[in-house]
Length: 315
Image 1 (cartoon, rainbow, N blue to C red):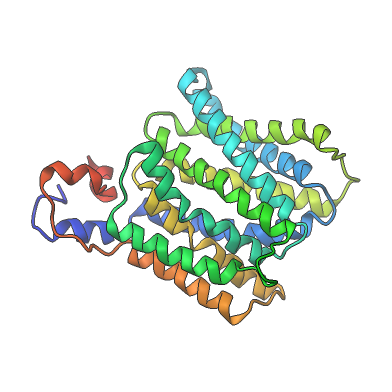
Image 2: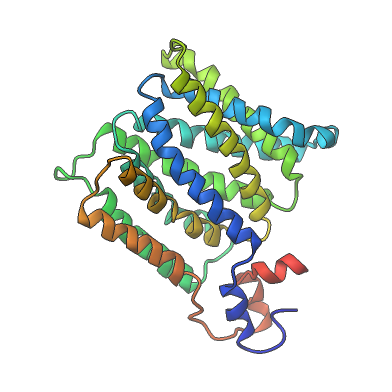
């Protein structure tokens, strides 16, 4: 195996980028591009209707892939899809609501505040203690987020910023839930359930929230359908890749999302201050530093604490 040949092999294997990591990076680029699309679409529709339309489209796209194996749906997969779906619904609804009043770049960088939350939740829920490098990485990411999302007027934060910041907890839980059941459930079935749950919750909550169906708009329809396709791809990739990629490593890959959103937002005319750009560089640095091995080889009893995605993939 990769980790038995020489004392320096664990560090080398952890630094390798495999297909799961590359898939997550591709999903991150799509994810970053979605902020500008949503920002423009919610000018013509309410957030819950848009989330419902987006995820119902994603569910319909995922249905043909899940249909051949749908009869094997288990109670565990229903619970997994339900819990992940609740996390997605809460995170995306609050994020979409916030995008009504803040720019796509600002939303993306604030959303990345879930980065420091995941290792903490991972430790509490999954009992997986992060490595030293992971803690240094999340500390750098947090410092970068302070520069990006720091309130401009004293300590006051606008409604859009506050809603987006709250959404980060739900997004962090979503990643933890995916990792909790990864490798124990069928990816196609769980993906379909979580997408359907998200769409259903969004449509059901429209009434209590006082949101009505908006007038027909091609901007809304095309945006929702396009994002629905992207969402289906992203959710399948996350569920597949996180079978062998640890929650902390996945989260730090996702930290590149605001960088892509910032680049795309700038191309669309959005401008960010120098401090925000510096914060973006710190987020990128967090991804790199998190994969550096600061520890000497440990005794075999500690091996489970340092997950080797490459070794796990071939086990």
